[in-house]
Image (cartoon, rainbow, N blue to C red; front, side, top):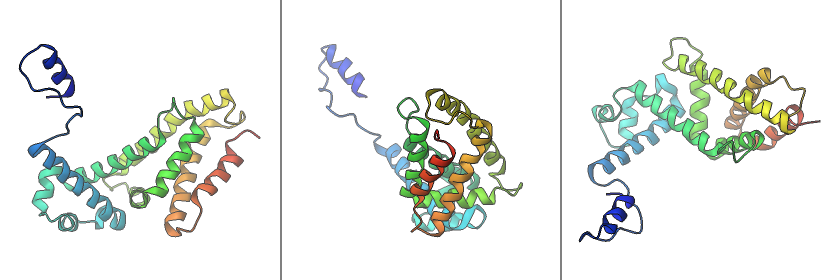
Length: 216
């Protein structure tokens, strides 16, 4: 029973127990299943980030969480599905870091994403390795990464136009070209930071923003 149901039940005057002041999370087998999936995902991020998709094995992931390969497959079906779940996890964390476009302008969102890159080196390494692997047209993520870049480009164009209209983006910017240049710069800076953690990722990105996007 959720909090709303408990309040409704209490209001009906039945002899039910009073509603808890705090909503309860999943309990029993479902909670254990979710916790186990989370452990598998975290270990898969670690393995795929170091070895990539092809070299990262289910056996190594299973060993890291004290399970068998069939146990991993019970939760995720196959290696490709687990891999896709890891990419989805990475995307969700980036979206959370970027925040709502209604609360942050595009420049603030870009900066927030780069801050998230620095905060989560495992996911950053994963993305860098896998995006390079996915240039092989036989890689299981090849089509997904092509679509990902195309969708990101289409999605950022309206935000760039809105920025030009409100004066936060320079008016003479070619927004179609910029929709591809910006992620390329972000990916390249991320790779340099992964190779050299002393590299000041966020300052370098701010330099890029000032020189390329912001009004002169």
